[in-house]
Length: 160
Image 1 (cartoon, rainbow, N blue to C red):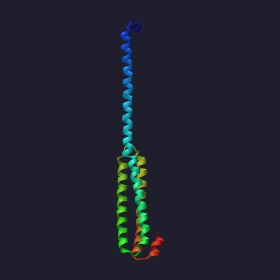
Image 2: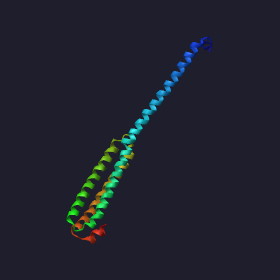
Image 3: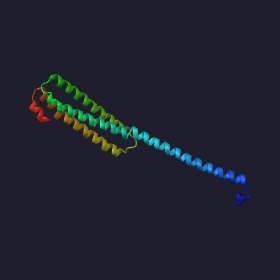
Image 4: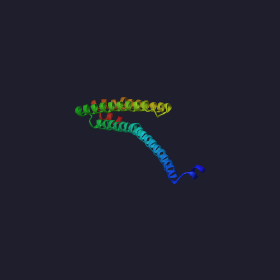
């Protein structure tokens, strides 16, 4: 305490500004660190969960497309050109679904922030969704196409 009393005004002001500069530097460094952390979290959100939700939304839309095509197939019963186009559309939609599932699975595998137990649960849900799509394609879509190709409108409508 006697050191401060014996210091001249110039020394006291220099020491005060030095302490203030040191505190300001620490606060600025802390702020920069938080900004870097927020940026990292933002990049993760854009690359991970948001992209995953976009893929899931794309899967949902493709499933609606499949349902729409199947519904229109009843109208195309006996019309070879339209049935051929419907089959091509269904094949493309199924391929898009398969690709999207694989993209989502890879996104999940590459996400280091998700716990392995949670990854396992999500992976099993993806597998269950794939099985349901396969079942829908084989037990609903294919019979509808067979009825439509055989010009059996009643059978087609019964399956829808």
